Length: 371
Image (tube, rainbow, N blue to C red; front, top):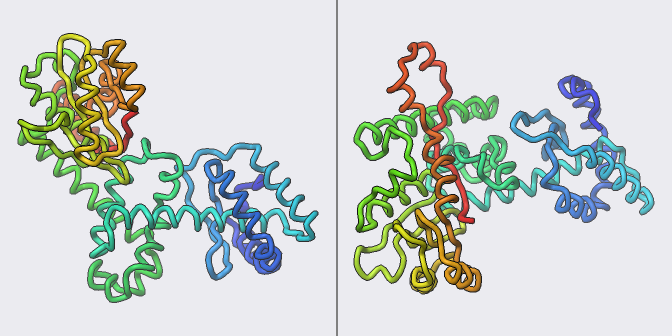
């Protein structure tokens, strides 16, 4: 469809797109419901190389982190064009693609704004929005595809402009409003970088204060944790924090079958941790199922360094309790804990200061779901 991507950067191409949008706007408005249905059906597969703004002008959008579009979508758009033509509405193919992009942008922005509001309520200031944006962006590799595509600098700019006044921008960001209007993206990226550096600084501080280990963790390390189970619970809590969850620990006695309460976006999970030397039986499943109702959670899970008996698996399947055994735990440890091996490598293998300085670190927590 856009066979010559070089043309995307030519001003004449943008002018052509803007003129087409104006020419076919009435036809697109008549067929808006069908275009929206098309977007809902194919939204996961689309990338957006062009942006159709509210004033009707067309602009280039950075999509370097978007996956390549599936080739069948070009055929699907052409089929949509043919269907609309049969209904009496002809829309040029380029213009139709731009109208589709317009609907995709609205869909993704609505999702972005909903998630911000869900996590912050009514944001008190711009800084709180930026911190949330940076924190969630750090886990984009493990976000759902739809959420990941909505978490963009363009949606962040729009959210700030729609929810904060000119005075808020000037007073809170300490910039001139005229500068913001000229280049909001570079300004926000500079602030994003500073916040990311703060996160990295906090991480190295936690390592130096021994709140986080320097060395990778093995299953043998897990097996050697204390008999009381508290060390294992604390380790799982830190692991889930790396996965992007907010973690609360239940009281030591009278925990009603739950050891950890995890929250992330709209998800609330109660976890029972079992660091044992034999397979886990029915009792743990019964306890955590009861804890789900007691703590008002959506999901219950049992996590162990071993495995589960057959009766326990049957009961968990019936009660819809999630089970995480030794194999799954090892996978999580490698993915979310041991992926941060940079500091360990610096300790055991001396490298030049130039190499350290030029290394790109990624320390922000990632989001995951218990599965």
